[in-house]
Amino acid sequence: MNTSSDAKIALLADGTPVRVKQLPPEIHCRTPHYLRGVPGQVDALAGRFRDPSLLAFNKPGLPMRYLYRVRFKQKDIWPDYAGSPADTLVADIFEHWLDVLKEPAHERA
Figure 1: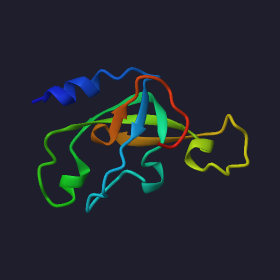
Figure 2: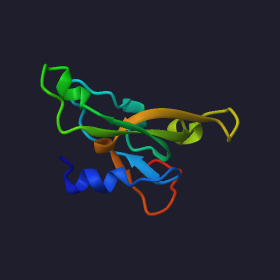
Figure 3: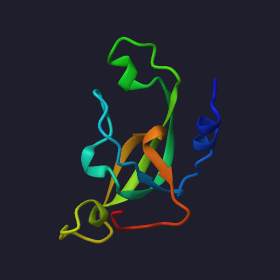
Figure 4: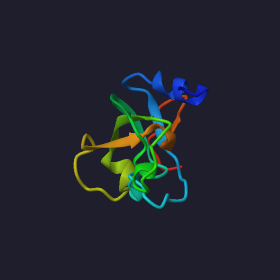
């Protein structure tokens, strides 16, 4: 069953600006710490999956979560990055770790 927040996040189109939430880590967490607080944009919806932070503890992993491929500029992740400004990193991030931004932002919060 979708909650209203599930339905809202599922509507994210490719290119939607997002920021990874700065939450305390879950015991079993798939969100890289170095991406917390970093803005990016949705590249694609990877699908809907059972929640791995619950599956790790032999729970059913429900509610199911949307998983997005999010593209980040390297310079936004590592401010001293000396490579090309066009260099990016793509990471799979579950919907409950994303905040939708009203417009693109390319600096840490």
